[in-house]
Image (cartoon, rainbow, N blue to C red):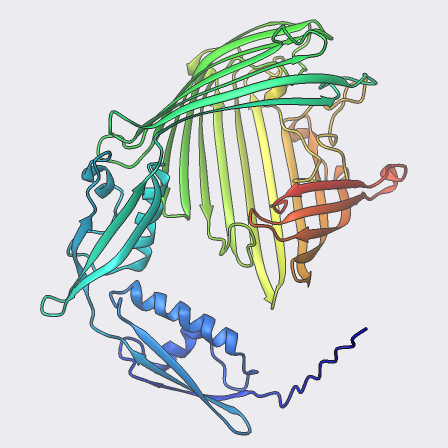
Length: 508
């Protein structure tokens, strides 16, 4: 048996006495210190200093100084004096944009995704955006855009673009077996279902970077496993550029067939969707949707999630995302506004409008402690109050991304069997405190408040439901895996037990 002892000599805790800059001409000393947020008298933190200096490098490289170099050194006495030496280098424009020739992909397909041109001021953010756009074409396994030859006489720097083509065509197929309970059933026995799904795609149609994809899904419930009870077929055609504008257009014809032998329900639907998307860097995205569909169902009630509702719809989704990190945001905000119109001049059996909006904000209180807040409002209005909005298009509430502590979709109006009916007005807000525990483990404390009503006129503050809870997160490469436990509050929920929710990514 071996005992190992570690002796830690912490030494003195030093503070930052002063900062001395040299070589800076683009920014004054006061502007420089504001940008890197150094405060004399604060505790000396080597990691934070290096992190802020790296951020400063980007500021220079976004303003025409690709050869910037920043050196830091310290003198330690009773306190620490920090010396920063800046070698800004020359201010450069972009010279030639050199694109590697490929047999399979014309150079113009690559060049049109690059938003920097010869003569532009060097800008690292625009170069990285060009790299992201090239990846989005699905044509390349690898994209490298690097600085090339520097010509000081003309004050230019060349950009070299190197790409590695991906596989343009592929086919995949999946077979699965699962056991569970049928949807919209009470006290039912579990059923065994067997499913097959497959897809085929081509990502460089006619050597124009146009994409097509065919997806199909087939499933049956035992024992009638050789009789398809659910069949879905989707065809996607993507035109990446409309005229001279980078606004991808997706055309999606589809076919849907569902048969439920338990409820003797069948539904056949077919239609066409069109989706256009415009994105400005990673911050702003606008997406337009138009759908025309027909549906034939054999059912006494429309209150079933299996029914594909006939639609003539036009909608827009606007997203403004200023979060500093997609998976682990510490500061910034995200705004989503999504209006839609069904029917009216478009025709069809239903005439109604819908509006959903959410606003999430994040504050880094100190160190790794983050306070997050979300507010979500959704409303719908039908032209004829005697004609209900289709069940599948109504709003629902409750579950791991809204009001935790309540079962999925179980807040709001219910029928005589206790199943959710949905509603036309929804409001909820979330407050969450996120903090680290140990290495990849993190914790949450949250309060969720809100409710769902049949109509906006029915909403009352006294109807608000509240849930308190705690959560545990585990850092993973695809975001935090979380386990939340919420407890419904209020005397009307005294007999209800708490709910455990397991999911990937934060609730908002």
